[in-house]
Length: 329
Image (cartoon, rainbow, N blue to C red; front, side, top):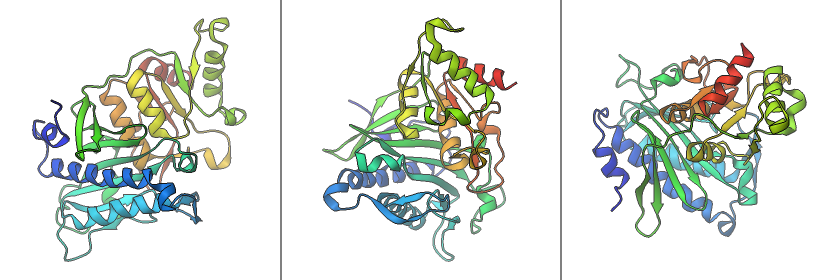
């Protein structure tokens, strides 16, 4: 019989106090989001909200609904000191006078939201940090959240696809849990996911090829040339339009995912958010034996200086990520 998520967490040695019930809370809230995504057309909650978020991106109705599901419950649950989201301008501390914990949760409520209206794969990405030393019991500020990815105590994502799957690390490998809709339980379905060191598969949006910097252009030219080129190997290309979808494939069977910086003025710092997307996914990839960089630097070593900081992303099978880092050097 498969372990439940709760049973799995109880068996992990050395987890900080209060972390396991917080992860259980997030998983429970993602069950609600999964049901909401599944009922999107029936409930009339697909489509645009007619507004932009702080990132300057069109907000979907489900972006805001999922954000509110997470924020309201986490802030009222007594386990966090504050939350931050891609869909909110500022951090949200637990209101003064209400019970609070010593954790900070950072999340992207609906990753790949452009896929919602075409019934494509979307997901929720989350990162858990501890309040900085000496700040326990105090109201959370933006400065408390500005910690490098190496400080994460847990990270994961939930992918809402043919199955609803939670992929999680607490710093002891990467494990997957599937939602049993008959019982509402999260059951462990994969243990110790590992990214193969080598791959013949890549994911990138080639529509922006004309804007790429030289190292990325060189790499993609080589893999597209296949057996006729310098690599002498045929590669396959995949692109889902949601980071969780492409990363889930990398964690399941290997590959490399690229969302690099490029020469456009609004892309010189990258597209994906360091804290909401890149850091939690980078921790998962490294825990599974892969590498995650901005093209040259390890993502988890980057010290954030603002909440909505962006970064280029190159992650997956170590041999390919290292090759691109060599091209940058």
